[in-house]
Length: 298
Image 1 (cartoon, rainbow, N blue to C red):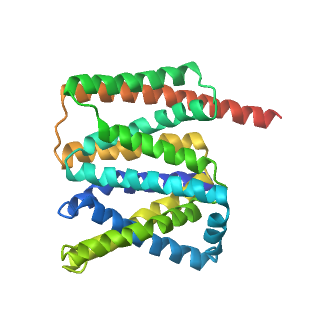
Image 2: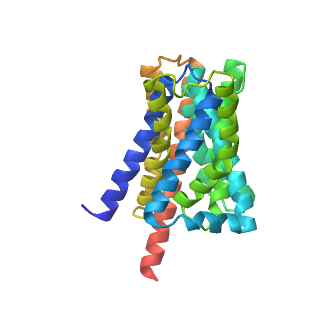
Image 3: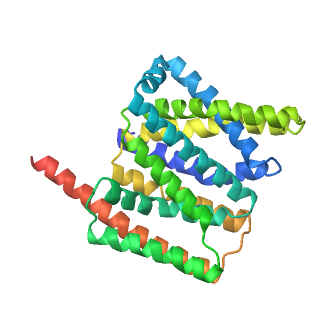
Protein backbone atom coordinates (compact mmCIF):
# COMPACT_ATOMS: atom_id res chain seq x y z
CA UNK A 1 0.00 0.00 0.00
CA UNK A 2 1.45 3.36 -1.06
CA UNK A 3 1.82 6.31 1.32
CA UNK A 4 -0.87 8.23 -0.58
CA UNK A 5 -3.36 5.38 -0.21
CA UNK A 6 -2.56 5.15 3.50
CA UNK A 7 -3.17 8.89 3.78
CA UNK A 8 -6.56 8.69 2.06
CA UNK A 9 -7.57 5.71 4.22
CA UNK A 10 -6.61 7.64 7.37
CA UNK A 11 -8.58 10.69 6.17
CA UNK A 12 -11.65 8.55 5.44
CA UNK A 13 -11.39 7.07 8.95
CA UNK A 14 -11.14 10.58 10.45
CA UNK A 15 -14.22 11.86 8.63
CA UNK A 16 -16.19 8.71 9.41
CA UNK A 17 -15.55 9.15 13.13
CA UNK A 18 -16.44 12.85 12.98
CA UNK A 19 -19.49 12.22 10.82
CA UNK A 20 -20.92 9.53 13.12
CA UNK A 21 -19.99 11.26 16.40
CA UNK A 22 -23.50 12.69 16.69
CA UNK A 23 -24.71 9.18 17.58
CA UNK A 24 -22.26 9.13 20.50
CA UNK A 25 -23.45 12.49 21.82
CA UNK A 26 -27.06 11.41 21.41
CA UNK A 27 -26.35 8.62 23.92
CA UNK A 28 -25.41 11.35 26.41
CA UNK A 29 -28.38 13.63 25.67
CA UNK A 30 -29.61 13.35 29.28
CA UNK A 31 -26.41 15.09 30.49
CA UNK A 32 -26.07 18.91 30.16
CA UNK A 33 -23.83 19.95 27.22
CA UNK A 34 -21.53 22.01 29.46
CA UNK A 35 -20.81 18.94 31.60
CA UNK A 36 -20.10 16.81 28.52
CA UNK A 37 -17.80 19.53 27.21
CA UNK A 38 -15.93 19.65 30.52
CA UNK A 39 -15.38 15.90 30.43
CA UNK A 40 -14.32 16.04 26.79
CA UNK A 41 -11.72 18.67 27.68
CA UNK A 42 -10.28 16.83 30.69
CA UNK A 43 -10.21 13.37 29.13
CA UNK A 44 -8.72 14.78 25.91
CA UNK A 45 -5.93 16.36 27.94
CA UNK A 46 -5.20 13.05 29.68
CA UNK A 47 -5.13 11.16 26.38
CA UNK A 48 -3.05 13.73 24.48
CA UNK A 49 -0.58 14.10 27.35
CA UNK A 50 -0.13 10.32 27.44
CA UNK A 51 0.56 10.26 23.68
CA UNK A 52 3.13 13.06 23.90
CA UNK A 53 4.80 11.40 26.91
CA UNK A 54 5.15 8.15 24.97
CA UNK A 55 6.59 10.10 22.02
CA UNK A 56 8.94 12.06 24.30
CA UNK A 57 7.47 15.35 23.03
CA UNK A 58 5.66 16.62 26.14
CA UNK A 59 8.26 19.42 26.56
CA UNK A 60 6.96 20.98 23.32
CA UNK A 61 3.79 22.01 25.17
CA UNK A 62 5.83 24.18 27.53
CA UNK A 63 7.75 25.64 24.60
CA UNK A 64 4.51 26.58 22.84
CA UNK A 65 3.23 28.36 25.93
CA UNK A 66 6.61 29.99 26.54
CA UNK A 67 6.33 32.05 23.38
CA UNK A 68 4.03 35.00 24.12
CA UNK A 69 2.73 35.32 20.56
CA UNK A 70 2.08 31.59 20.17
CA UNK A 71 0.44 31.45 23.61
CA UNK A 72 -2.02 34.24 22.77
CA UNK A 73 -2.95 32.57 19.48
CA UNK A 74 -3.40 29.20 21.22
CA UNK A 75 -5.66 30.79 23.86
CA UNK A 76 -7.85 32.23 21.09
CA UNK A 77 -7.87 28.89 19.27
CA UNK A 78 -8.78 27.09 22.50
CA UNK A 79 -11.89 29.19 23.05
CA UNK A 80 -12.94 28.90 19.39
CA UNK A 81 -12.74 25.10 19.42
CA UNK A 82 -14.46 24.99 22.82
CA UNK A 83 -17.33 27.08 21.42
CA UNK A 84 -17.48 24.80 18.38
CA UNK A 85 -17.61 21.65 20.52
CA UNK A 86 -20.26 23.10 22.83
CA UNK A 87 -22.56 24.22 19.99
CA UNK A 88 -22.21 20.88 18.20
CA UNK A 89 -23.04 18.90 21.35
CA UNK A 90 -26.00 21.21 22.00
CA UNK A 91 -27.23 20.84 18.40
CA UNK A 92 -27.51 17.08 18.86
CA UNK A 93 -29.47 17.46 22.09
CA UNK A 94 -31.96 19.99 20.71
CA UNK A 95 -32.49 18.02 17.47
CA UNK A 96 -30.60 20.40 15.18
CA UNK A 97 -28.06 17.90 13.83
CA UNK A 98 -29.07 18.71 10.25
CA UNK A 99 -28.29 22.38 10.82
CA UNK A 100 -24.94 21.35 12.30
CA UNK A 101 -24.13 19.45 9.11
CA UNK A 102 -24.97 22.59 7.13
CA UNK A 103 -22.43 24.46 9.26
CA UNK A 104 -19.66 22.00 8.46
CA UNK A 105 -20.59 22.02 4.77
CA UNK A 106 -20.31 25.82 4.87
CA UNK A 107 -16.97 25.89 6.75
CA UNK A 108 -14.66 25.57 3.67
CA UNK A 109 -16.38 28.56 2.08
CA UNK A 110 -16.07 30.56 5.31
CA UNK A 111 -12.37 29.63 5.37
CA UNK A 112 -11.95 30.92 1.81
CA UNK A 113 -13.72 34.17 2.74
CA UNK A 114 -11.56 34.64 5.84
CA UNK A 115 -8.42 33.96 3.81
CA UNK A 116 -9.43 36.68 1.39
CA UNK A 117 -10.18 39.18 4.17
CA UNK A 118 -7.28 38.50 6.55
CA UNK A 119 -4.48 37.30 4.27
CA UNK A 120 -5.60 39.12 1.12
CA UNK A 121 -5.67 35.79 -0.69
CA UNK A 122 -6.99 36.26 -4.21
CA UNK A 123 -10.31 34.52 -4.85
CA UNK A 124 -10.83 33.24 -8.37
CA UNK A 125 -14.24 33.78 -9.96
CA UNK A 126 -15.47 30.27 -9.08
CA UNK A 127 -14.59 30.81 -5.41
CA UNK A 128 -16.33 34.18 -5.38
CA UNK A 129 -19.45 32.59 -6.85
CA UNK A 130 -19.26 29.74 -4.30
CA UNK A 131 -19.11 32.17 -1.37
CA UNK A 132 -22.01 34.18 -2.84
CA UNK A 133 -24.08 31.00 -3.24
CA UNK A 134 -23.38 30.03 0.37
CA UNK A 135 -24.52 33.45 1.57
CA UNK A 136 -27.65 33.15 -0.59
CA UNK A 137 -28.35 29.71 0.93
CA UNK A 138 -28.20 31.16 4.46
CA UNK A 139 -30.52 34.03 3.46
CA UNK A 140 -32.92 31.60 1.78
CA UNK A 141 -33.09 29.40 4.88
CA UNK A 142 -33.56 32.43 7.13
CA UNK A 143 -36.43 33.78 5.04
CA UNK A 144 -38.02 30.36 4.58
CA UNK A 145 -37.89 29.24 8.21
CA UNK A 146 -38.30 32.71 9.72
CA UNK A 147 -35.13 32.35 11.81
CA UNK A 148 -31.44 32.46 10.98
CA UNK A 149 -29.56 29.11 11.08
CA UNK A 150 -27.51 30.27 14.06
CA UNK A 151 -26.07 26.84 14.83
CA UNK A 152 -24.71 26.49 11.29
CA UNK A 153 -23.34 30.04 11.33
CA UNK A 154 -21.63 29.66 14.71
CA UNK A 155 -20.14 26.26 13.82
CA UNK A 156 -18.82 27.46 10.46
CA UNK A 157 -17.44 30.76 11.78
CA UNK A 158 -15.90 29.33 14.98
CA UNK A 159 -14.20 26.51 13.06
CA UNK A 160 -13.11 28.99 10.40
CA UNK A 161 -11.56 31.30 13.01
CA UNK A 162 -9.99 28.26 14.70
CA UNK A 163 -8.36 27.25 11.42
CA UNK A 164 -7.25 30.83 10.86
CA UNK A 165 -5.49 30.86 14.24
CA UNK A 166 -3.87 27.48 13.63
CA UNK A 167 -2.51 28.64 10.29
CA UNK A 168 -0.13 31.00 12.07
CA UNK A 169 1.22 28.37 14.50
CA UNK A 170 4.48 26.56 13.92
CA UNK A 171 3.73 23.75 16.42
CA UNK A 172 2.21 20.49 15.21
CA UNK A 173 -1.52 19.69 15.55
CA UNK A 174 -1.19 17.22 18.45
CA UNK A 175 0.99 19.59 20.50
CA UNK A 176 -1.30 22.50 19.65
CA UNK A 177 -4.51 20.72 20.68
CA UNK A 178 -2.85 19.42 23.86
CA UNK A 179 -1.95 23.00 24.75
CA UNK A 180 -5.49 24.16 23.95
CA UNK A 181 -7.18 21.61 26.23
CA UNK A 182 -4.56 22.33 28.91
CA UNK A 183 -5.65 25.99 28.87
CA UNK A 184 -9.33 25.01 29.02
CA UNK A 185 -8.92 22.33 31.70
CA UNK A 186 -9.04 24.66 34.77
CA UNK A 187 -12.44 25.93 33.59
CA UNK A 188 -13.58 22.36 32.89
CA UNK A 189 -12.51 21.21 36.35
CA UNK A 190 -14.41 24.09 37.97
CA UNK A 191 -17.54 23.11 36.00
CA UNK A 192 -17.22 19.49 37.12
CA UNK A 193 -16.59 20.52 40.73
CA UNK A 194 -19.74 22.68 40.71
CA UNK A 195 -22.02 20.00 39.25
CA UNK A 196 -20.67 17.25 41.49
CA UNK A 197 -20.87 19.49 44.59
CA UNK A 198 -24.55 19.96 43.79
CA UNK A 199 -24.98 16.18 43.56
CA UNK A 200 -25.82 16.37 39.84
CA UNK A 201 -22.65 15.04 38.24
CA UNK A 202 -23.11 12.12 35.86
CA UNK A 203 -19.66 10.56 36.21
CA UNK A 204 -19.59 7.73 38.75
CA UNK A 205 -23.38 7.33 38.88
CA UNK A 206 -23.36 4.32 36.56
CA UNK A 207 -20.74 2.51 34.53
CA UNK A 208 -22.38 3.27 31.16
CA UNK A 209 -22.31 7.06 31.45
CA UNK A 210 -18.90 7.03 33.12
CA UNK A 211 -17.39 4.93 30.32
CA UNK A 212 -19.01 7.06 27.61
CA UNK A 213 -17.74 10.29 29.17
CA UNK A 214 -14.21 8.91 29.54
CA UNK A 215 -14.36 7.75 25.92
CA UNK A 216 -14.69 11.40 24.81
CA UNK A 217 -10.90 11.69 25.21
CA UNK A 218 -9.93 9.00 22.67
CA UNK A 219 -12.87 10.04 20.46
CA UNK A 220 -11.43 13.56 20.26
CA UNK A 221 -7.74 12.68 20.10
CA UNK A 222 -7.61 9.71 17.73
CA UNK A 223 -9.11 11.48 14.67
CA UNK A 224 -6.77 14.45 15.15
CA UNK A 225 -3.74 12.16 15.26
CA UNK A 226 -4.97 10.36 12.12
CA UNK A 227 -5.63 13.75 10.49
CA UNK A 228 -2.03 14.77 11.13
CA UNK A 229 -0.90 11.43 9.65
CA UNK A 230 -3.08 11.93 6.55
CA UNK A 231 -2.09 15.53 5.78
CA UNK A 232 1.57 14.54 5.58
CA UNK A 233 0.81 11.96 2.86
CA UNK A 234 -1.83 13.48 0.58
CA UNK A 235 -2.38 16.84 -1.10
CA UNK A 236 -4.42 19.56 0.57
CA UNK A 237 -6.95 19.38 -2.27
CA UNK A 238 -7.50 15.68 -1.51
CA UNK A 239 -7.88 16.47 2.19
CA UNK A 240 -10.53 19.07 1.34
CA UNK A 241 -12.41 16.68 -0.95
CA UNK A 242 -12.48 13.76 1.51
CA UNK A 243 -13.52 16.11 4.35
CA UNK A 244 -16.97 16.46 2.77
CA UNK A 245 -17.60 12.93 4.03
CA UNK A 246 -17.93 14.38 7.56
CA UNK A 247 -20.96 16.67 7.02
CA UNK A 248 -22.45 14.16 4.58
CA UNK A 249 -22.50 11.49 7.27
CA UNK A 250 -23.85 14.05 9.75
CA UNK A 251 -26.62 14.88 7.29
CA UNK A 252 -27.47 11.19 6.77
CA UNK A 253 -27.49 10.51 10.52
CA UNK A 254 -29.77 13.51 11.12
CA UNK A 255 -32.14 12.39 8.37
CA UNK A 256 -32.26 8.61 8.75
CA UNK A 257 -31.18 7.95 12.36
CA UNK A 258 -32.49 10.99 14.25
CA UNK A 259 -35.44 11.45 11.84
CA UNK A 260 -35.14 15.23 11.83
CA UNK A 261 -37.44 17.16 9.48
CA UNK A 262 -36.07 18.04 6.05
CA UNK A 263 -38.25 20.85 4.74
CA UNK A 264 -38.60 22.42 1.30
CA UNK A 265 -36.41 25.32 2.45
CA UNK A 266 -33.74 22.92 3.70
CA UNK A 267 -33.74 21.26 0.27
CA UNK A 268 -33.17 24.58 -1.51
CA UNK A 269 -30.45 25.70 0.93
CA UNK A 270 -28.58 22.39 0.82
CA UNK A 271 -28.77 22.28 -2.98
CA UNK A 272 -27.21 25.76 -3.13
CA UNK A 273 -24.48 24.78 -0.65
CA UNK A 274 -23.69 21.56 -2.54
CA UNK A 275 -23.46 23.54 -5.80
CA UNK A 276 -21.18 26.07 -4.10
CA UNK A 277 -18.94 23.27 -2.80
CA UNK A 278 -18.75 21.71 -6.27
CA UNK A 279 -17.56 25.04 -7.68
CA UNK A 280 -15.11 25.56 -4.82
CA UNK A 281 -13.70 22.02 -5.04
CA UNK A 282 -13.25 22.20 -8.81
CA UNK A 283 -11.39 25.51 -8.48
CA UNK A 284 -9.20 24.15 -5.66
CA UNK A 285 -8.42 21.00 -7.65
CA UNK A 286 -7.41 23.03 -10.71
CA UNK A 287 -5.20 25.31 -8.60
CA UNK A 288 -3.55 22.31 -6.96
CA UNK A 289 -2.95 20.63 -10.34
CA UNK A 290 -1.51 23.84 -11.81
CA UNK A 291 0.81 24.27 -8.83
CA UNK A 292 2.09 20.69 -9.15
CA UNK A 293 2.69 21.11 -12.87
CA UNK A 294 4.62 24.34 -12.25
CA UNK A 295 6.71 22.56 -9.59
CA UNK A 296 7.45 19.63 -11.89
CA UNK A 297 8.51 21.89 -14.77
CA UNK A 298 10.80 24.07 -12.62
